[in-house]
Length: 285
Length: 108
Image 1 (cartoon, rainbow over the protein chains, first blue to last red):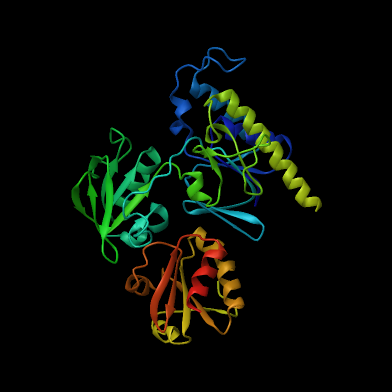
Image 2 (tube, rainbow over the protein chains, first blue to last red):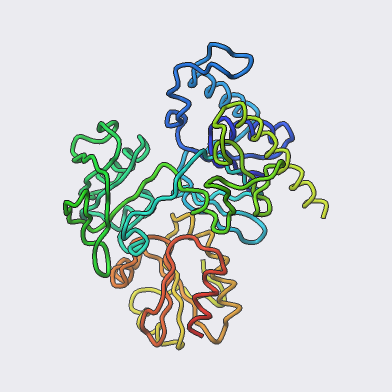
């Protein structure tokens, strides 16, 4: 059980992790690989004070190393569910369950998206996690939708355990995908069937399949936490970075513009200090 | 992963188990499934709170693939609610306790 789970490994999340560790709280940072962060691809960060000629990757690596050195735990997995019970959060990160008392949402800007048929067939052929549900689809036809190297690896895993895989992406290039897996660029996807999934429509073309793995890089906070208040499409927070849910804080791009590193870092620190104060108060009470 | 109010159901027992009560709830799980372990205490609480009105069982999908297949369980955890032996509702994935309460209350 961690004191604080930080959802997102960008500047806001890493700043929050650093501040929480300085205050001796246990911290888990749940995020995609650092290389998937938009900042990582930035050649030059011209406006972060103190480091005038630094690249995005160097800055992110330095922040990550600092948080790690201070003792933050890192879980490089996609967070798929957040359930509150018995005074704590149960966070489903693919096949791992992480328990934490407080949450800091720092996952950047993530649009809420659902494909047609997705909800109807969830658990009846639609899955969000290859390592969790792959075994139900051995020797069967599945399509995998993904945008990241992690998703490509999950598709390879499905192939290895005996699924017949087609990979769909909006991104160019096969990346780490095995040569034996057909790759299709797509724009729209619809899941169809009767009791269970029978086919998908990819840009209107039919592909017969028994399973559909939707491996989005991130789940929108509002889909993870029903009841989370938004303001003009961003997570609503006050100056203490509190959301409307007790023990849940937010920082960085997910709270609104400007989408800048300095703003994200500042908010990350405030969110962590607020979470620390909330945890300490609960302990006393 | 069973308690006084939650019965571990195996293979051929399943059909009889569905006849144990008007309302029967079955949690499909596997030992390697992290969500399933997190859900377990919730299922046990529900079994205790609705004792008498609702029979609650668990099916290990690793050793009972045929039962999972019969009910189109293709993801874990999946919780099915049966009324008079027929599936009337299901919840897929890790869900808060409220979601289960709502589902059960609808059929009480």
